[in-house]
Image 1: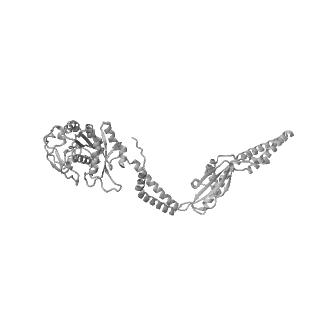
Image 2 (image 1 turned 135 degrees about the vertical axis):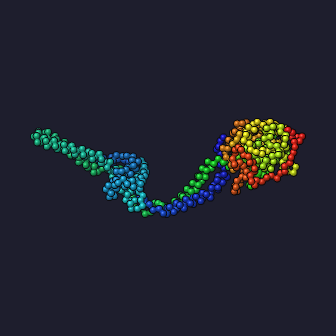
Image 3 (image 1 turned 90 degrees about the horizontal axis):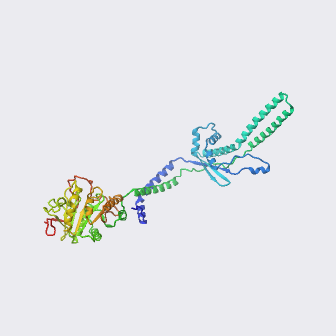
Length: 539
């Protein structure tokens, strides 16, 4: 079953409206907290030094006969990493007067400093920003880091020249020692002159290397040194307050959306029709004060829809069930049966909920009348009268109640209900059966296949999409004819306090001997008469 659906503008507006007050309250609380925390926080200053990183070499100077040493070109991201490396930070601390910076000093700079890069084809900009509670320290540390990074880049240009200088120096020392040894040995002047020529060349190369070393050009240069900041960058009380307010709104509505997405409750009858894939035959409001009296107009509407859905069946045997307890199935069954009786249909109401019967209590029936168990044990039972309930001054309703809970309900119904129902079909136009909820027990599965139609009841305050889907799936797998669903416990936008006044409050189970009705439950204004089975109703 496809669980995706579109939300209408009206539903979106109602969602925003429902969450407006809590969202506003939470947003104001977060905004006030952000404001006071910002006001009590120490000001933080930020200083920024900008460095220009060139991506071209100085080779164009060779046309003027000038040769300069430059650092090899590296990617700008390498400068970003080098700025916060140990050698650069150590050099920066030494420049600020700390000769032997500790690990804590290194980590302090790394916490305060931030490096950002902006690149293009010809050059790149590196921004070194330092935050500190002291505006002077922020500026001095930013400049120290920038200068240390430039020196580190300059060192890359002189490293290989220093190696050449060191190598030439060692070679010159070796040549000088050889010349002294040759002179002491009174070697030939030609051999000594050859060594002296090489020595002169080596000294010239050393001079050139030392000159290039002193004139090495780095790829970095400071474009704009850090200035002492005048205003703190944080905290910003008014900005933080505004952000806190917006965050509170988004947070509250986000929680509400998450709650709605996790909530499997059915919100309205459109959801009920979509989940069950059944027509909604009637809608009943939530009842107050324990009453089971449903509005006559809605009951008449349900009666008309049931007749239309089962117009090909005669007599009509309708089983009324629900997925779980406390969804109002018994109220619908009784009111529907009374509506048929008022419209001149010879109607029989059967309380087949052997786990928790309520019909006998609601109609004030005594156990002097024939009970469902009697017919299940003997389909031709004729020892006690069937209860005859007067629903108005001129119409009556026959009732087969259940007086006591039975621990073997499924077995009893499987053994005798089919034969008893065949006898009742001959005597009545309409048979309404109030059965047990389907998901907790299997009683209804033994009854529903014998009936001409099944009416599913969904209590909007207690049911959810999983319960409705599971109930419909089970009934369809059994080949049961589902005529539709009736929604109960509907509430208006302004909800009243208190719950639905009836249901399976103590849970479904066995051994329930006390079948008294709920305290204070409003009983229907009916009279009970004895009616021996006459010519039409015979057993």
